[in-house]
Amino acid sequence: MFQATRRRLALWYTAVTAVLLLLFASGVYLYVRNTLVERIDDTLNHVVEVVERSLVLESVNSDLGQLRINVEASFRNNTDTTEDDRIDLEWFSPTGELLWSTLSQPLNIPLHPNQSGETVKVMRKEEFASPTSPNPPLLLRQVTERVQIGRQVLGYLRVSHPWFEVTKPSRQLIFDLALGTGLMVLSVAASGWFLSGKAMEPVRESYQRLKQFTADASHELRNPITLIQTNVQVALTELELAEAEGTISSSYRQQLKVVERLTQRLGKLVNDLLFLARQDSGISKESFSSCPIDALLMEVVEEQQLLAVEKNITFSLDLIDPPASETNPELLDNWFTVVGNWNQLVRLFTNLIGNALQYTPHGGRVNVELARMEAINRVSGLRYNFSQLQIRVKDTGIGIPAEALPHLFDRFYRVDPARTHTAESTTRQSATGSGLGLAIAQAIVENHHGQIQVESTQGIGTTVTVNLPVTLES
Image (cartoon, rainbow, N blue to C red; front, side, top):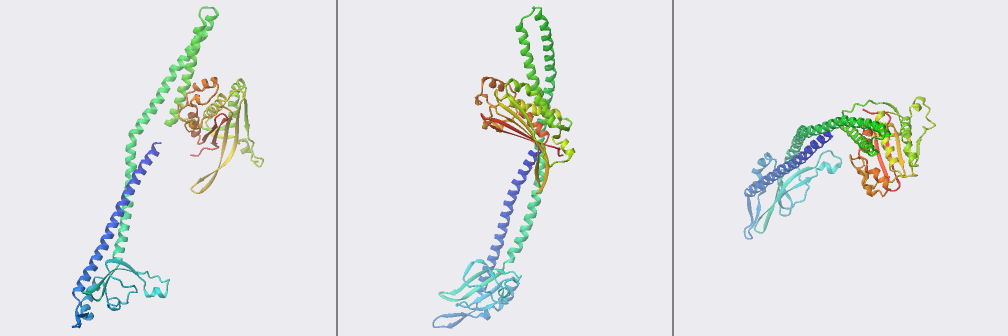
């Protein structure tokens, strides 16, 4: 229980930290990437301004005031500088014709003014010839400026910068952030496991003290209760002799009998609490051995037969025979045998069968069925066949309300007798229970690595199904 809680706490620590680190890493990545893009755009715009200031204008028609750009004189001094900065220049005529470029081959992309910067993908000539070419397309960041004086457009200047100046550091940043985030998550997971263990220590100590107190209290109560029972029994024996002599009244004897019944009930409650406390603390040291369930059920049915006769209940035990195809003599001899604790299993089925008889009205039926089943368990995609015994205790009793079914195995939980609409005698019987019977049954089944399930319909009956593995898995 504590290990599961510790794992959940550590998992929550790790999950919350991982989400926060992921958000932080995403914010850092977006900030750095946007900064790189803005820096390139600023560089491109700066180059545009420098080139525009260095353009050499020539007069074409002085009367009309028309001008033109001397391309050779304007761009001769800018070639070396742009190549050093990995920046390429292109000059276009007012009609969009490429007049000068620092590129080895012209870019096959349309021309349109754009001063804010845009990312374009350029298909290389080899890719047009061979669509399966391994060369990736060229990505560029571009700024296109319309150069004009007044209303006269002198041409267009396009400045390009390789996009890998953004993608390369971005990829490296992603790798660094992923590595750092992963290491941080692992560190937080280890720290969370350590801190959750520290946080659970006071709770574990308190729980252990509580369990120890319950176990000690139950153990200490057993002795005085045993003494009370012994003394009451001796007193009753002496009273029989005194009554025969007429020296004491029968009312006093009746009071002692009431005391005896109360002490017996108290003793049973203490034994139940002691059993549950030992199961919870893990200090129970019962030995496990081969237990023939068919013989065990026959013994329990024989013990409970008297109650069935008193209430005129049809009480039966059905053993489902092995299939005719099974010929292994050793397996047939141990067909209904499991590895378990005999005393615990007797207590389990005594509780279940006793409940069925107690809450079944006169003239009803209680059937106990035992069968061996082959089941399939899937672990990590692999199938494992294993055998288990299925014991079903079915009655035609008063049934259990649907809203009470999820709480049946809670300790000290008892179904409200007002909801059962049964006879007065049955209501009185149900009120005397301690509410620990099914909790003990569940503890015994879990101790044998089995499962228990209750199905019930109010006014029709209840079926309790217990599945026990033939062999215990470590």
